[in-house]
Amino acid sequence: MKLSARARRIEPFYVMEMAKHASAIAQDLARQAAGGGQPMIYLNIGEPDFTAPPRVQEAACRAIRDGHTQYTQATGLPALRERISAWYAERFGVQVPARRIVVTAGASAALQLACLALLDEGDEVLMPDPCYPCNRQFVSAAGARAVLLPADAPARFQPSAAQVQAAWGAHTRGVLLASPSNPTGTSIHPDELARIHAVARARGGFTLVDEIYLGLSFDPAFGRSALALGEDIISINSFSKYFCMTGWRLGWLVVPEALVDAVEQLAQHLFICPSAVAQHAALACFEPDSLAEYERRRLEFKARRDWFVPQLAPLGLHVPVMPDGAFYAWADCREAARRLHERFGPAGSNHAEVCYQSNSNEIADSWDFAFALLRQAHLAVTPGRDFGQAATAHHVRFSTANAMPQLEEAVARLKALLG
Image 1 (cartoon, rainbow, N blue to C red):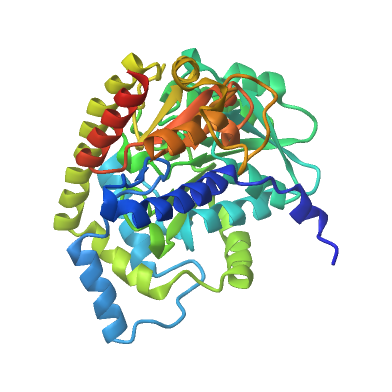
Image 2: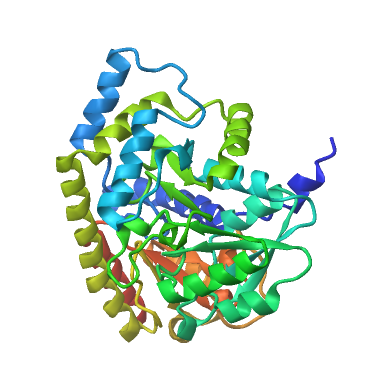
């Protein structure tokens, strides 16, 4: 059976490959647990360890009990769209009419709808490098091509307006950004974002901003929605990260009024509607006690960052830009890899049987290094190869979404291995 060209051009998701190997090793460790085996610690998953607050869980149970489980409008429950609109006004001081908000089956569906509404075969979209790999694949699935703009530490791993202007070509349709970013946890400065948007607007292009970590901003200088720049901004958001509802698969899309009808028609055909139960539950996210709990959790994520990131540099894991949001640390692992090689030799990564045969006598890149941590420290992290090409081979992503005892144990294992 012949695969479509679309399916063939989608790149592998190496994060999931790493997760499979971590799971296999974890199963072996579990079998050894009676004999004092060491459990796996997962710092590779971008998922809050918190679940939905009690009021949200109660709302879901009530929706099921009361039979509120049937189709909703393709754009979502009107009451939920109104609540999201009010949240933008209260939290960010931005007026976003509910009619411009489309509730979706997760941020992934929102990105798919946006790409299908905006892109044709052969179009190009400018994106930062590094960036979240799935965002590139949504562009590819729509028949377009992601053009990556290398972004380094002095630029906070975010593109500049000058880069966007220089890279804009005949096939460019717009820019797809993320603020705060996965994998770096860094945001675009609002002034630079305004300049990028001005470049796109002057060329008749779009500015699409992934803001799913916006609620988890720790620095007031960056914690502002791109929607403040004008009604032609397109924003993606989600109930997964700040609202701790990852498995509920609920997000939303804010579009200019001229795009609402097209996005609604696409949603009707592709998704019918988001989960009714998840939508009814999400209404409770905006109750005062739920919002207070989310803010408590945001401060907990900040405390984890403040403790964990400074622990890395003495171990040869350098985070050149302190993340201002989300729960990630983007670390240069070259010095740590050298230490590991000196201690264990060329076989330190011990992963040739599950990965590839390296011709080097050293731990060559973050893929090797991540496998070495799996084997030697029973610690799962995410290697950089998924996130682009701009020095990503020398970086790993740590997730600090875990509770402090796990982060402390992870650092203890790193010190034993690298200290």
